[in-house]
Length: 249
Ligand code: NAD
Image (cartoon, rainbow, N blue to C red; front, side, top):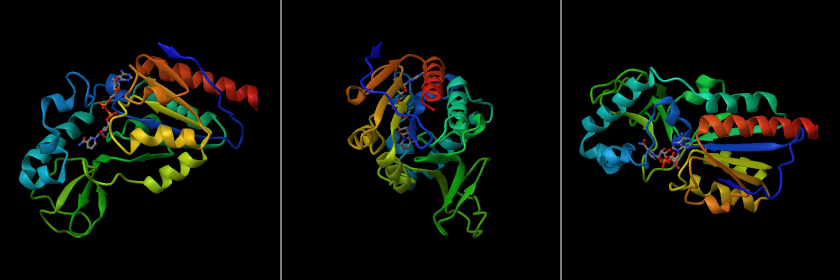
């Protein structure tokens, strides 16, 4: 199903694009989504593993949850949708910002460079003693030592949990307020503030596009939409944008 296009982005040398991605872009790489049938939150209560209160109650359970995800991620590769976004960044002129809600590193692995992880990163740890974030690729436990201040027992996954403030919001809001094109990919549009980005971009005059398996909760707010698997709709849309840009230069 496609939503008729109302308006087209201007893609000149000074154009600005913001892309938002969610769990759906990594689904075909083998990473479970959150709210879909059979998704992560149907198997485990998010309050136990994705809230500060859950961590305070049972840190071992939280470490175990993220350790398993981190170990699995070592074998997972980016797919055609991640690669298409890296190509878009390389080939289009102007300003580009990729904002991902995902904590995997598949965008970096595909070659994306201008990106921010608003919900943190699985391969990072945050020390509650010194406040430093550090790369961490092995298992983490209540006995782990901070690589920066050497304190033992104060590390946590550097992941933004429910009730916490997402990262990089100043940079994201600045980009949204100046963008010509906003594209939301593989996200259910149920978690704020990301769910509100489409309204913010629209308010500032951007052309808005949704690429998802099915209409998201805020699907009606987009001026254009293409529904299908990310590995199909994202490369096709990127090809289209590169063509549009070539005609407008
Ligand atoms: P989601 O599971 O809510 O939605 C996934 C979306 O992807 C759905 O709309 C679905 O239709 C779509 N989809 C599924 N397969 C697809 C495919 N092959 N191609 C295209 N689309 C596909 O995930 P979300 O929107 O990313 O959830 C919001 C955020 O809440 C998560 O990203 C996550 O960061 C989050 N959150 C998680 C934690 C944590 O892991 N501890 C903590 C805080 C917040």
